[in-house]
Image 1 (cartoon, helix red, strand yellow):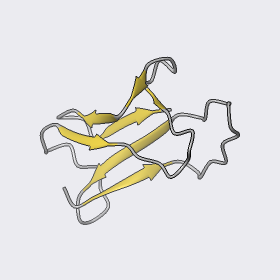
Image 2: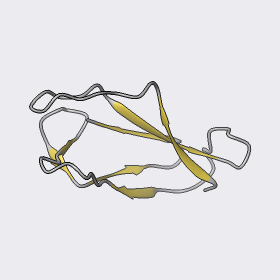
Image 3: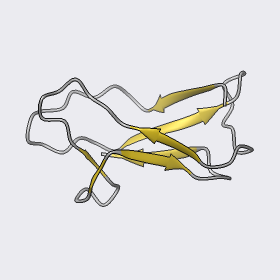
Image 4: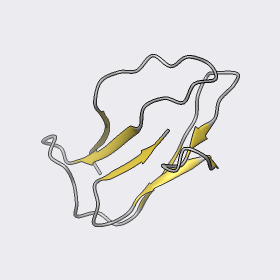
Length: 77
């Protein structure tokens, strides 16, 4: 994997309100989506005191996501 990038515009999130869906994409050295790699686990962290990340169901609390091969993306709230 050459790099990870967030797809979409930056978000301003209000405390207590669920953000819009975040999607992270695995890319090659040229900025193209990389579908060739296997599963890539990603840990999630924040500097917020009320840090909480949610699965795509917007209910289940998670500590990370996995970009599953042959996909190039993973999403979370």
